Image (cartoon, rainbow, N blue to C red):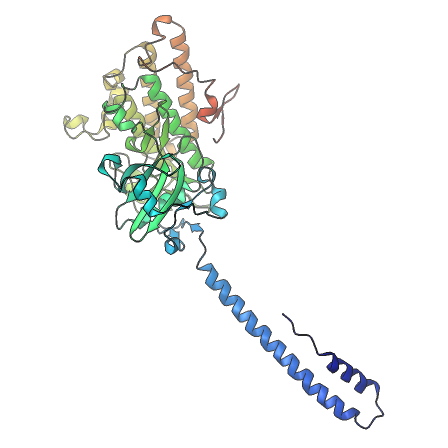
Length: 441
């Protein structure tokens, strides 16, 4: 705060300047000048000192910002001071990007509450395990079910990536982030609970009653919507890098939600850049071979993985079948060869019912997969184009099914109701009319 001059100083100064004929005028002027000089020196010194404190304070505050930042040039993402508190960090509506730019609230529960929610990470509550860590079912104090991901020790990068990505997204076909927690050496992510297993379990028959062709087509479209959203409707775009059947969670209504963003990367914001140079991450059988060869990551790497997933959906096989004959061990090569020779029905999952309509779906989905699996990324379609093609396939399928009453029930399992795509269009994130249009959820 700026110091004020004492009134007597002002009065003395005025009188000494006004009364030029008094003998003491010169002395008054000298005295006042010295005092004024002392005051101004003190003021200038105070300003310098204050300025120095403000700068240091600002620099100090910058190291304490709770904002999560993501490096797009390397795999070294950064989270500033996330270890400053053992409290649970939560996000607003669906962990949207707006919640990241605003204040991160800390609810009233802690690591101890997470332990209670999972019954001390009881094996009975274990619902999954992967390279990142173990997932448990938990019930929070308010009674809501959540999935609690407990990270393996020594994997801070995947933990940061997951938080950074989930905090920026909001879509019905992507798992919702509730928050994250760091407590000593524990790293916890709490996400939406999807209690009907993953796609791989359904294809294996471990879950559910088997997926019929219409259900598989719906799941393919859901996944395509999710990846399209990541590539097109986030800023900057997000590359998932680990699209695979075990990362596709299935809801009770047999809808799909893409999960596990431990390997995710934000695309470069440089409009002239064509790729990101980075270490190869992903799962064997799904990784783009061009990415493996060149270390150049683009959104077309996700397109390749999606092509593998389409083949998996139509054949029911794993991407790599080590117990099969040599010519059939790499599923995409075997399936594409069957398609090329006009024998796509041989590649069709034996669990699927054969009909002209379902055969048409398998053939056309495999044709789309062939485009996604192109060896050169420039030849692959965008994910938005994949959604459009899949919607066209589903429309043709429904037209064929509705043309005969005999086929009207052949595409659904006994306990799965027929869904009308037009009435469900908002669930898909699609605006259907005379022309196709994608909308984010």
